[in-house]
Image (cartoon, rainbow, N blue to C red; front, side, top):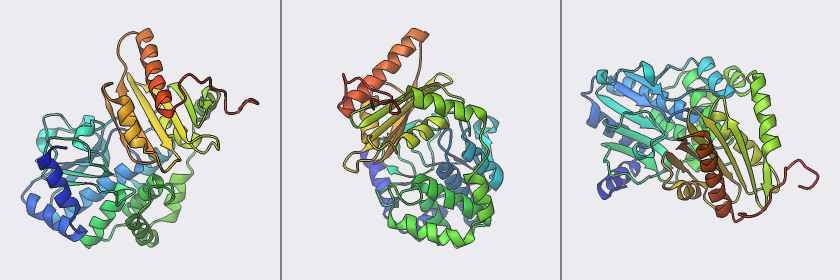
Length: 357
């Protein structure tokens, strides 16, 4: 991030939640209509945070605010999350940006490029728990990762509390599940504010709705994909890698990487899959001495697309161009780079379920 942008982000991030809400009011009190965007193919943390920010802007600044997303909501739990909680999200294809004079990004940053905000629009508000990315654009209000939060939902819960907004059971459940999902139930990348907000939200949630989200009915293709993922998985020294081929939802790449991260022999798990001309990568790391976000950015540097994350989890989206043979060669090169980074280049992997594993 450029010097001015870094200064802006640092100044806002260092403020108390009450001061942040007051800064929002001072900066944007005269705006007419707001649009909050999640990252593409949003997860619960991103969606809950976006809806919470819209509530703050509407309740405390009097700005009617819509929430939109790019890509799809494909994972069963995520689709149930939106349906059960009746979250007011709309696809970006239904949005006419000229109707808005206030733009916000949550759980992503302007430079990351994994969002659908048009390139000619500079976001007024950027709120993200991930580490600050290099970006020469100064957003008027930037509250970016300081290492103090495991989920963006935690940041927005603090905003609600500072603004004295009592969330209804649906919004409370959304934020609670956003924290729960991103921190793996307070087991991963968890900080004191995550625990505090998690406990504050718990008495306000609807546990029946939460159960519907966490235990949705799953389509047959879900089990077929997992079957193929396990069959294709290869175990190396300290790493497990699998290619899902073409997937019906990019969310499944992250879900497979997450599940494979529990394999006892692996410190790293990497899953890849193709969707609509893009290669999706998801990386998990169980070694606290290593940083998945930094590694995936280094490996994917110069390949186009976007990449980011933090200590134990990260993801990337890279463009697949040219004929099929070129795409296959590109995917092999990406995997080769990861194997080199894992220190297993040249090793011959075995199926983690085979007798030789």
